[in-house]
Image (cartoon, rainbow, N blue to C red; front, side, top):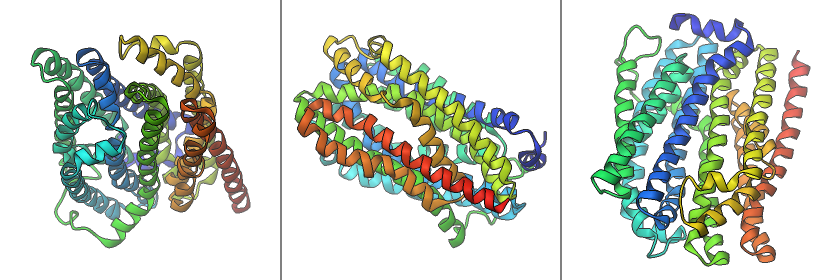
Amino acid sequence: MTQQHIPTALGTEKIGKLLMQYAVPAIIAMTASSLYNIIDRVFIGHGVGAMAISGLALTFPLMNLSAAFGSLVGVGASTLISVKLGQKDYQTAQRVLGNVLVLNIILGLLYAVVVLLFLDPILYFFGGSDHTVMYAREFMQIILLGNVFTHLYFGLNAVLRASGHPQKSMYATVATVVINALLAPVFIFVFGWGIRGAATATVIAQFVSLLWQLKLFSNRQELLHFRKGIFRLRRKIVFDTLAIGMSPFLMNVAACFIVILINQGLIRYGGNDLYVGAYGIVNSLVFIFVMIVLGLNQGMQPIAGYNFGAQLFDRVSKVLRITILIATLITTTGFLLGMFLPDLLVSMFTSDDQLIRLSAEGFRIVVFFFPIVGFQMVASNYFQSIGMAAQAIFLSLTRQLIFLLPALIVLPHFFGVEGVWYSMPLSDLLASLVALLMLMAQFRKFNKIK
């Protein structure tokens, strides 16, 4: 199938076949991306030590914030491209590609400079101590030096998916995982670079994949490719991109703030730096299933966006229903593993008995309502995919700010350190109920239109 025929196929091919065509590569890519993070933590846990795991956990808010700026541009632009392709507006889609490149360079540089200037105070504010900040600092200094490459890599990967190249997007992500998995143990164990070795492997892996992406978009035979005149920032494109991308941006910013509160709560009520490390391990395990659902969402996004732009609402509804069903199966698998095999899973990261015990206890609590998390994630992405930015922003923030934030403040007063863990499944339940109400209202609107 040529690139020119792919937009038409999005509006005519069977929904199930399309979803598999787009989602399977994205799921493989996102699973690989989650393994990418786990590889670092496994090598660091066994090669540097249990306290280094806690130090690495301190970097989660900064990594979330970096991802927030990346998704602000990448997700917004990919959704806009999907809608424009559905409307046959190829010229605007081309200009969006050029704006993605420029915006990512600007935001990537600004973020790296600001965070490097205030890195130590930020890490202590995140719940760090003299025992853990040293590890977090060494890791983040390297990551921030390569931040522009990271932003460009994630941004162009999102555009690859939206422009009809889900397989190539998958190849780019898998390549970063393979390169990182090969380089990290060499840098950590052979060269003796410690946690800096893990960060260096990460940056090099993303840079290599970025070079390949740039080569792909330099091919003039592609529908979307780099050419003269598309790199000038255009007010409407920038505004629309940032408006649509604001939902995942705010969600990641909220996640950054929430992780800070969780770290501070675990230190305050647990009184041990290892609690921060335990949350880091739990977060890595949960992240696997979250990333698989995100991959599924990425497969749904161009299908829903194109058909919404073409006003084929039956197809939009069908892809949503199928995506919700698959997402629920994925998160239910995470729930079962967390209930019955938590000790086995967390022992991959460390051989420290106390850290294993704390992590297993936390993991079992966090996944208690995990079966319905997939539904909530798909609902939020659905509104984003069809360009309904306000609804997507509200829905993506309900779990983090409306429910989780108050729970993190209130529950620990009654349940101590367990209250910090309990806050997470409680917010999952409440946010899913809100998502259900909003989806029901949207389906009623579609039925009226039909």
